[in-house]
Image (cartoon, rainbow, N blue to C red; front, top):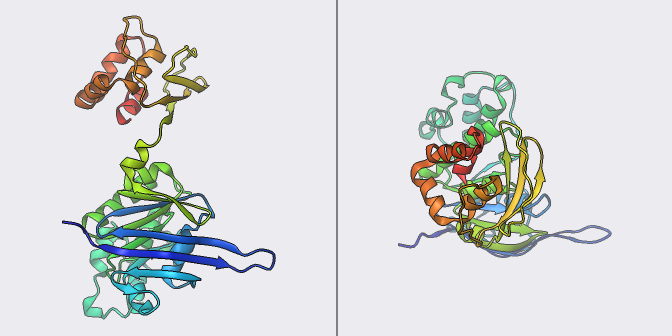
Length: 328
């Protein structure tokens, strides 16, 4: 059964008028987002991602085009469109003297949600802020403030949530926690539209990805199909001890950078190394790991233990290296 489109955009344009030269922030944008998916809008700064969100939020007026959200036309039913979406801004915007509970109650009131219909306590529990419900917002950690922004976007129970670069400038641990929160929301049926310029984030989170560049949609496909189009891949290894690598004349792997505890190399994913010798050096081992399907299947089946034993047998005892290779 095909899922319905909860967001449909046709020939959307936004032109900012400047004295010197008009700027096309969005140029004939066409895309559909399906119910229940995590859709990624990828692109560098200035690509038009935030402009797109601002149009749906009502803070920016589109120049032309059609936008339909949850069955409502933006031109004919702007209030219903805004009621159908929750927006998590990139900047942390919170009143430091309000508690999370009071902030959510205030936000619900602004959306016209009656007191007996509010789910403040449930939302706080969902984002793991129930224990901090009555603390001042200024006392919360950076990760808690980010989760509170997500909570604010949920007070009117919208079917669609927009996350505008939610992990910009945050550390690795906080990023992982935010990913878990987003996945949890999606599991409960909420459609997620995520804007980001982090390739890793889009790859891990999104079912489909659209790529914006200078206001133009240059690619739109499933995450898997887009990744399959990438012929050359670059991998960076952080090693737990120094390792000296010589750039062998192997067609499959090319060292881009080699330092004591960091190695960066590229490889062509469709190349394969068939011959395996007992006296393999490090480069040959990496070649086999990344280009030999039988070897990769063994890693998937037996995981880190198998790879650790293999590396140790070849004189390369590196827990961190093994752990990273298993993930790839």
